[in-house]
Length: 189
Length: 314
Ligand code: SF4
Ligand code: SF4
Image (cartoon, rainbow over all chains, first blue to last red; front, top):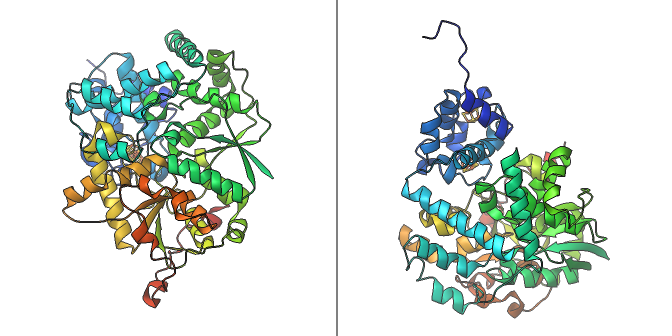
């Protein structure tokens, strides 16, 4: 039993605060972020509710939300937040914690977004640069949606919008080395 | 002669070739010598920072370190997303020296980061380093009669502590440049709304909805065309426009031009140098308005004097 006045440690809040550099307890739930956010309609919990969930230590529920995957880092909300909370960084912190703790949402849209980012990262790791056509093709293969955007492809190719050649950083090896080092850093912290 | 390190970004040699090539023409007219950053790498875009912490900082940092090898004091970045990644990494590194050391340890072979190269978007470079007067001086074909909605998107002016440029709510720098070219910027309230960015591939529905509202509002402002300074905004608004029209059940047919295409045109370069064939929505009908008289009622609809770049400076 928790005695009256006893403080319960909210480890989740501490972790999110530390990673994001903001103090979420400052949020006074005005909702300005929600009315500003261009994708709050697509989120199952808009930014204001995410703040409250973190305050209440609702870790599992927060990790399962799609909100931090839909956040575009457009910073419209943080520019207007009267408590100066860096909301996109809070979203990022929650996302990174969920990845670190290996929590995977089974929301199909979230899965799709994660696949996109994974392919993009692979591309950078291999070539040091992004290669747009390959990016689209791999995305369609991995999401089993082979014909997505195919109606755009002929026109885009015709107009030279999407190059067929590869571009590689001369020292692509340097990028691979960098990635290994960065991964090591991630583990040692 | 002004010197500038040029960071083209991954799309410059693909989807946004017309941005890259007109940028080079414009810089030549403005007497700016651009030197492409040798062996630059992808900034990581959205994906690196969505998925990783250190790698997301290491990618831009490598470019910043490489830029320090060149004698130029400023690096100009074409893509708004690259600009945002690079500038926010610079701000992060400059304010947290221990973190900078830690991330620097992943790229020891490239060298040490000192933080003495400034990072600017091309828009910021035009506005601050060249200035609207010098731009106006180069105009030989004024774009009189052309009504333009200036679309900045999220990342050129936000977050304010990162960009330290113009207003995050109602920026005016691009509007001023358009005026210098002789064009008439419209009162466009959606100039800093998000276009949906990288969701173009992973969740197209979001892009169709967000970019759709931007097109709608630009049309309503009376604009003949939208001008942008970012390849991702351009491709979302141009390439996805037919799908947006289908979804909305109406035609917009509003072309999306790069700021450098309009500058090149006003500086006297021929139409073919703008690479019109690259556009999904044809640009010629909009540009045919050049030379027309702007009707008087429209005259009053000058951009509202909300927070302008000038009045924002404390
Ligand atoms: S705008 Fe800031 S203070 Fe208001 S609800 Fe959102 S996060 Fe909380
Ligand atoms: S940064 Fe994220 S949460 Fe904030 S307004 Fe943009 S999309 Fe919404």
